[in-house]
Structure formats: structure tokens, C-alpha cells
Image 1 (tube, rainbow, N blue to C red):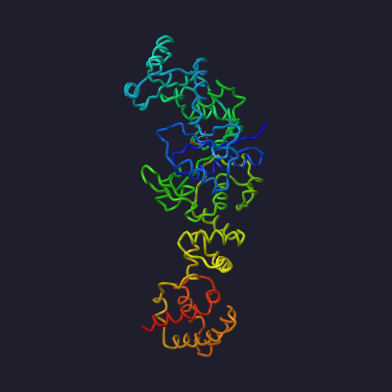
Image 2: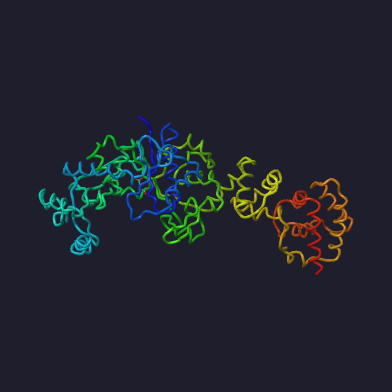
Length: 506
Ligand code: GLU
């Protein structure tokens, strides 16, 4: 049997990090078993359709390097891969269910449903559902009989198709993470399968498509567990339980207070979506890991560890290593806590781990996206290697490296002034003289010259290094100051010292 997994998002908004973890686990499992990973767009709810959301999902998967083998863009033998283009397929299955007596036509208007909810509302049951308690009191084919039902349908009356949930049945399945899970049918309602617009609901479409697309394993978020009984019944009625994919319901991702939400991101200042997303209807903006400065390798690595480990203390994994090591039986049941500090740690480790040429390319993109004109790559590569230890996010390189490319616009003179005096000013005047006479220009010589001159002048070199750093960098940070001088060159070093001296004299 071919292993076929799928990611089946509804294109309704940004892609939450939990969604990407779902993609990742499906992807890893398919790759590891020489199978196929499918992208299926579940866009049957036209009221929730958001323009641009599908393209955004593709961009996110591309950025993460988790490309589907089959999908709306890639194609494949089991298409179309967008459910809205499969509308005609589902109707026949809905009719088959009706013919088998396990589904029925329902003509109730939204007002009638509202009335039912009010009429059956009790303190124990504040939101009554359309289920075996009420179905025989409603306008549906179970009540109205064949002739009346056909008459209404021929007259063009709007209807939906609902599943008829059996009485007192225990519905069971084996989850790859949770083991045996069971539900009592008495708590499940008669879910709509086909809507008045002829579109299937998620429940019908997901089952039909998993069958037709020969999905062998479906890993999805735990929030879908409550839908499982309806899906299992549909599998039983339509295709047989032996054909049902192996399911795994992935543990929730927890934020600082319970389930991680989009709002947590805004509240605590961390991204929750893979990439920036602006809702076209509300203009609501949510920050993405990509734009925040995460490397996709680190993002994927961090997500893999949200709910899984390989049983050792290893935390840094490449995608290939994950393909090799990942196993469903090591995925935890309990919710996995998202820790933003830990996410940044992963990124920092990946910045250190990346091949210097590769890192340099990505830093170049990050810097140019902030409007910096870049000098030659060799220079940038040296800068990148010098500052990378100080960078947690790709976006940190701009602040950490800007002074290598531009004369600082402001200098933290307040940190120099309290201990500044004419001897120190004299030292820098002479150091400029000495620097101007240098033919070789390397950090060791610059440091030796600096120290010798300081000793000659009876000033502790340590007291001069901070002013020198501020002259070159503008502030109190950065790698060894003589390395900075070596990098920016004689002319620029002398210029920056002179500028600072003028400001200090003023
Ligand atoms: N369309 C569902 C979603 O938006 C898919 C859930 C499933 O994988 O069954 O997540």
C-alpha cells in the first residue's frame, strides 16, 4: 500500500504555526515511507472564503521547504485538489447515504432552526442540537414521507442533507497517538452533509476526498477529534471502515494561557503565523515568523520538537534528519507548550550552524529588504561571520552590522564624556597620525600600535577602548574594536575618530 498523507487547510486566513506543524508531520511521515504528501484546499464554505489565502498557504509551504507532491499547483492523478472544483462529486455520495437510510433531506429554514433551539432550550441543555430528540419534530424527509419530500424538491424548495446519527451506538477508532478513542452516538448531532447551495460541508467532503485521493494516513489537530464520530460513520456507510485512513490527532499547541491563539501573539509580541498576514476584509495584521527573521530550517526544527523528540537530548535536526528520525509513536499526547524564547534559541543555533555562504546570502536579502545597498559579497561575508554570534534573528543583522556599511549617525557621547580629558583627546590625535602612516592594515598591528601609544602616554589602554568603540560603532556593542577598524579601512576609521573628536570638543 502506498503511504499517502495530506494537509487539508481551509483558505480562510493566515497559517498558524500549529498548521505548519500538521504539514510537517504529514510531510515527514510521507517522505520517510517513500510516499506522497498531498495538499488539498478545503474551500467549500463560500461564506468563509478569503481571497489570497490559498496563494499565501503555497508561499508558506514553499518558504518552509515542505512542497506537496500533489496539489492544486502541482497537479496529480487524483485532482482537482480544490474542493470547490469537485462539487458534483459529493452530491452522489449524499444521495447514496439517503438511499441507504442513513441521511435525510431537511427543509428547515434558519428561522425554524432558531425557533427549535429556543423551544428546546433548558438549563441543562442551553444550545439544543438537531439530533434524535428533535429530528422527528422538524421538516425533513423522515417526517414528511417520500411523496411530500419529492414534491418539495421538485418545487425548488431549499434543502440540506443531514446524517442520521444512530441511537445508542459506541463509535470507536484507533488513533496513532491517543490509542483507542470512543464516542457515544447519543451526544452527536445530525450534522449537515450537503448545504442548500449544493456544496458539501467539511464532514462529507473530507471523507469522500480522503477516500478518492487514497489517503492512507491523516494527521490533524486535536480540535478535529470531536468531528471524528461523524467521519467514522460516513466511512462505515460509504466505503467500509477497513478503507479508513489511520488517523492521528496532534496535541494542541499551548500558549501562555491555554491554547495558543493569534491574540497571544499580539499580546506577548511574538509571531504565530508562518508569514505575515493581513486579512483583506478586516485589515487585521498578524506577524509571521519569516518576516520576524526566522530561518525556515529553525522554524521547522522548532515545530518538529513541539510534541515530539527522538528519545535523546538532541534538539537540532535538519529536515533530512527529521525524515530519518521522526516517528509517530514518540509524539506526545499532552499539549505542547510554545516558548518564544526557545524558538529564538533554535534560530540562533541555526544561524551558527548554517554554511557561511548560505548565511551571507540570507543576510544580504534581509539587509537589502531594509533598504541597504550592499557592497561586495566578500566584505559582507566577513561582516556576517563577525557579528553572527550576536544575532538571534536574521533581522538582527541590520542593527548589528549597519556601522560596517554606514558612518553612524549618532554617537553615544554620554558614555565617553564623564571620563574624557585632554590627555585622551591628545592620544586620539596622535593615534590618527600613527594610523595615517600605516601601510599594512590589520587588526593585530592596529591593536599593538594603540597599546604602545597608550603606554607611552601613560594611559591605561582599557580606558581608551570604550571611546574608540563608540567612535567607530556609535554605541557600546559589536565585536573586537580593532577588527571593526580593520574592516572599515583606514580612511573611514580616521574619519570617524576625527568626527567624534570634533563633537567632544564642542
Ligand atoms: N479543512 C480542515 C481544516 O481546515 C481539515 C481538517 C482535517 O484535516 O480533517 O483544518
